[in-house]
Image (cartoon, rainbow, N blue to C red; front, top):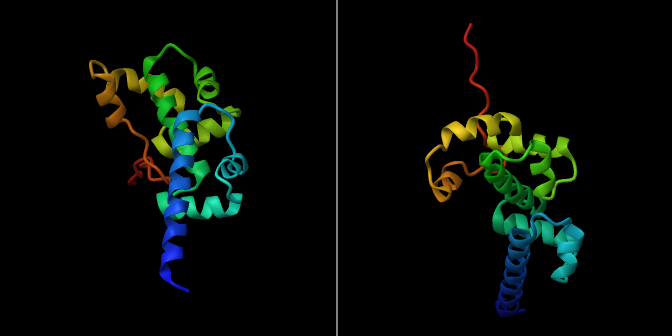
Length: 149
């Protein structure tokens, strides 16, 4: 078997993965699940999840939640919506899951972020505020400082 068909298949898979990522970027606030995303590109959910992780370093669900948290951060910085309203506006259906994932990525709960963000980004153009407050993926947010006895 030559490597050409494998390469063609690999390129085809990458194109389909890009379509999935683009769909997540566009439709982050819609109810999305791996099965629906996989059906949209004619892949099994398991194959999509494995290939997506290989290509982008995280699962489709992790990528979706990162997009939702990024948008939530922008809405919280605006300050005119409650945490619950922001949770539902970005497509999350569980306030608990939203708050947990937000805290994992950002390092503070959404209510604390909302209070701090107004002071931190005051006077910054929104495009700069978005860049400097971008969430960190894969549980890399700094934890609380350790106490020294």
